[in-house]
Picture 1 (cartoon, rainbow, N blue to C red):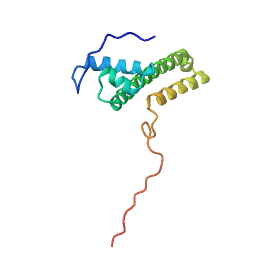
Picture 2 (cartoon, one colour):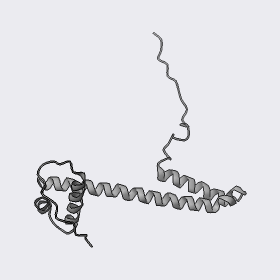
Picture 3 (spheres, rainbow, N blue to C red):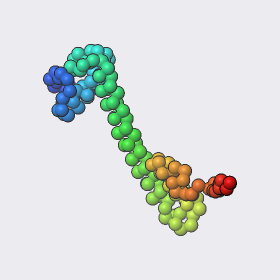
Length: 136
């Protein structure tokens, strides 16, 4: 269900009113969702052309996607925290399956947060060889 926005004033050229820009961006996404073409949205909201509308809508959707990913990541980290808390004491008391569960939670959290990059927490296991050029 779409929320009816008040009539937005027409805008010509660039403007610095961020609130108006945000309202126009939201309205553009809503109109596109309702099936209007980029040309129709440009005419209705006073954008210069359909390319501008396309850019505005795609940037708004990218920003929304980034926010959704952040929320999902937070939710998954919270779930992993809860799982780890549930088995922590048994792991500390020496229960091997619980300790393995804690390790799995830690590894999953590291992957989720991007902390599992090779070399981030450990040194490169490859042997280092120093090559000295011959003296002539």
